[in-house]
Image 1 (tube, rainbow, N blue to C red):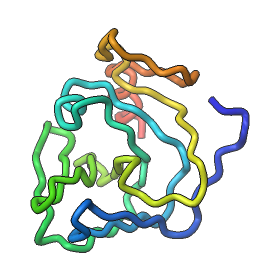
Image 2 (spheres, helix red, strand yellow):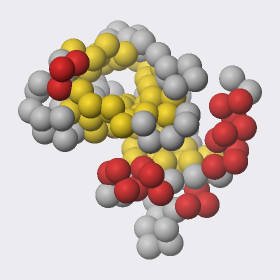
Image 3 (cartoon, rainbow, N blue to C red):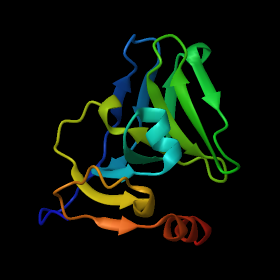
Length: 146
């Protein structure tokens, strides 16, 4: 993890899909980027999924352009049905959003600090950043302790 302190973003953070039909506003989030290496995320994105934990206070404008895929018993994925931009991964249990990192316009540099489902990461890529690494079992255990 970076030696600089990670600040929470106090004001709203905005973003939009490629075509601009869906607008996203996140009320508050930490400027920490995480990566998921699970098979579902890699299939969905063509590589690892880089996200911000955006909590539950996320506003999505352009609902008529949002399609939701029920990707598992515990989560769903949203995308713009006009341009295909990935909009969110959302936990069904508590409504917690994980927003793709490239979707948001950020004034500050985030810190890449964790990787999940590390046991599913293919051997053909790796990141130089030192990060916290969690297995799928550790991720599910952390969700059940919330």
